[in-house]
Length: 167
Image 1 (cartoon, helix red, strand yellow):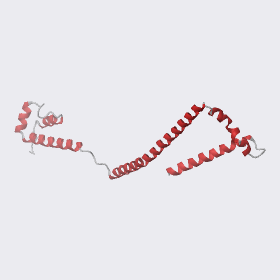
Image 2 (image 1 turned 90 degrees about the vertical axis):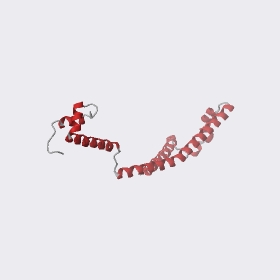
Image 3 (image 1 turned 135 degrees about the vertical axis):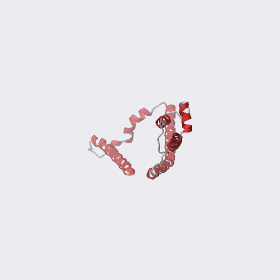
């Protein structure tokens, strides 16, 4: 650069800052820049820096290695879960289809017999003779307490299994 400052250097810098060079600037400034080395160097350097900034901002910033590793582990884990989940989903669909098939078969047989299953359910306790299974003198409340305790034990076992599986 020359030791003296050009009187039109501020005007040239402002035109460059507003991105008006070379098409939207006055023609006398373009003529001045062609003859002034200081202003032409300013334009050359400013345009080079603007192009470098544009190309640098266009590239994606690199992420840390830890974040990349974490994402790779997450993808690997999700892929493994998806591979495991496909047979489980197939088993669930099979169980649902089998249940629907059995229900449809039951309804078909009951439709042929005239839907007598409601009266059959009402006669079930008498036909099984549940009263003969209990000892003599046992209160009817005990007959209610035993299934409730069995259900509580079953639900407790399922909860313990699910909690221990997640840890």
